[in-house]
Each structure stands twice: as C-alpha cells, then as structure tokens.
Image 1 (cartoon, rainbow, N blue to C red):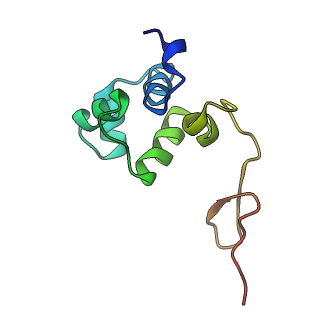
Image 2: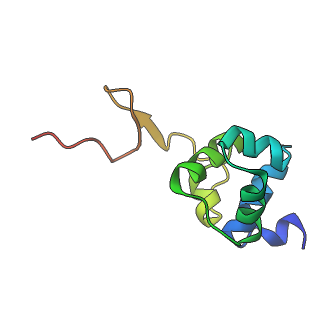
Length: 98
C-alpha cells in the first residue's frame, strides 16, 4: 500500500502525516508521551489514539485536524483562534458567558 492509497483511512493518514513530517515512530512517540508500540498500533488501526494524542499528532506533523480526521484540507489556515483567556478554540466555539 502506498502513502497515497493509505490516506483513505484515519490510521493511514496518521502514518502518512508522520512520514510526510520525516519522523520515525520512536521520535513521534517520545514527543507524544506514548510508546513506539502505541504509535504502531494507531498507524495499523489496532487501536485509536485518545483525543489529546490525536490533536498533538496533527500539531507535531503540521497537518490540520480536518485532514487527519477526514482527509480534508491538508492545512487549515485561520481555523483556530486564541481567546482572551489564551485558550485555543476552533472558530465559532467561544466560551459561553452567563
């Protein structure tokens, strides 16, 4: 299976993102705070990363969450903004004020 063919699944896009970023499984695992085996399991579809690992995977490999989750928009400029409290949220998800 080529990198292009593997981009049709989430686990394939996880692998493709890592390869495009030029990272080894061990290097990415260290940066994510998981084992190399966990990275391998995510990339083969044997298990799925928790949300925080998924978000950090996108950040570390410099791809958008849209692309990583669904194959859309490799980069998503202006898709997040930082609020007054310094928390980064997707646009349109401002905190509720009561």
